[in-house]
Image 1 (spheres, rainbow, N blue to C red):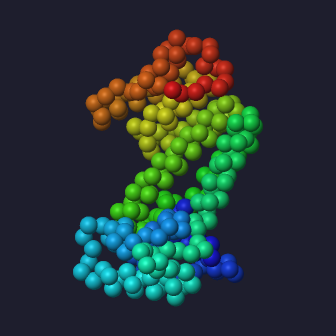
Image 2: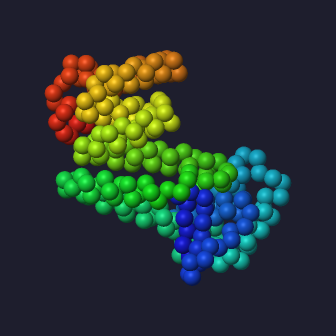
Image 3: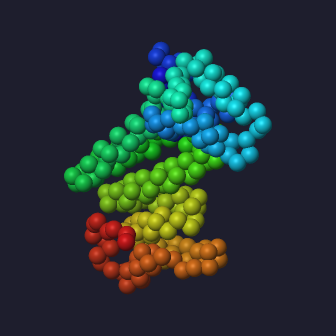
Length: 250
């Protein structure tokens, strides 16, 4: 059976037909067990992951009910004596994405920036929404935040590759959208400033910095970090080395 979590949880049988996974808490239980990657999770661990500190009074019956429901769906949930474990199952789209990103790193390290950017872009395209989208529970909420950060880091790495490939105008458009969605993320601001400077728009790069500085001061009561300040200073003095590649943030 194929499982996907880069968006709403989905499962597909051998013939490719989507498998019904039952009610939301049953789906959440399946997602939690998938994330154990073959390790067993104790009963208490299941309850904490799916319900948190205030489980319902009948939670033991609910766990047994949902485990039975997953088994009826053809999913091999085993009780090991110390916990529940999924046998012969993995998060297939996550595994495929990780393979693409490993290939991208290899291509980048080998100097093939164009292939690295394309592989990273393919990895991005696998996302169908937020990680385990729509499933509640403290464990999945934490995993959703963790994967959102990983997703942004990959996006930033891919955008830096595109800048090194001189795709400045495309990067500017995408980075403007990303900065609007993540206004306090300095790495995105750094990349937008660099893309603007290299596309012949140093004044716009300085405006972007000033807008970011104001946001950071208003919302965090702080100054921009050293990497962003250093890039600002280089743009101010029109450092010719900024036009050479590669330029790495601190």
